[in-house]
Amino acid sequence: MRKAAVFFGLSSFLLAAVVTAQQAGQQQQAGQQQAGQQQPQGQRGGGRGQADPKSRGGGQCASNPWNCIDTPNPLPKVDTVWLEEMTWMDVRDAMAAGKTTVIISTGGIEPNGPFLALGKHNYVLRANCEAIARKLGNALCAPIDPFVPEGAPTGSATGHMNTMGTISLREETFQALLTDIVTSLKSGGFKNIMLIGDSGGNGRGMGAVATKLNAEWNADPVVAHIPQHYDYKSVSQLLSELGVTKPGMTDDGLHDDPGITMNMMVTDPNSVRWEARVKAGLATINGVSIADKTKALEIGKKIVEMRATNTATAIKAAIANKGKSGS
Image 1 (cartoon, rainbow, N blue to C red):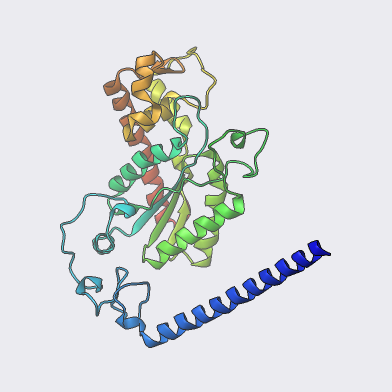
Image 2: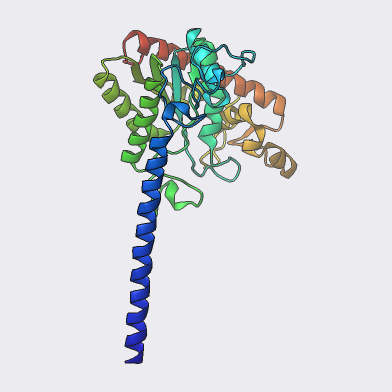
């Protein structure tokens, strides 16, 4: 009986606590709504409200002229193609100058042997997207999306999800993410939205999203998946033509190869653990040495240049064809 009394007493106390918390929450919500009604949106210094059609930059035009759409940028033009490195005024001015194409890159977080960072594809895209945008001359790069399908997120006995550190999205989550990113860039006024990937499992989702949105919006803006960027066969061919690889060379059996290693090095040699590998006598992959950093970077830059040229050509064709990628 005593245990029952304690139990029911505790239950009564918890019930009373829940009710009290609910009442407090309701009162707080009502107070916030009342405060919001008393403080008109247009009079706030910051926040997301856009009561004044001239307001931009996260604040209100009435509060500070630097929040006004037509206020000149107080700082010099920046030399970057990356949206995340730009202020809103930088983006506005770049678009006004004709940079109305934006590239969305999808990479991954996956295992790549003992030498390459999990973000392998993201390091590749950091070098390649910039090269593509600069080659086009009228393009910017959205932040790289590192979250892509790598297998069932719940884990698997096979594939990348059997290795710690891997991050995966379900296919429907990936497509929803891309849809929101593309839609955001459309809302920002971009006229051409191009999707490129550097991992084999990304293509289906990018293609599906691009095809769907391009049709829904009647190619305004043009949305296209550019599969020509994910073309490692051409990288292998280039390495063969340069004499870097030769028939009969060893294969280390790793999720790694000379082309992607040297492409990554253009962004950051530490992403392939270059210094540590040289010290450990492990600066080779599939029989190709990367010990000479200058030579490896020279080859890496040729890889970036070739991939950027091919992708830029395909982007131009896709825009001309209103969303159909070039051949």
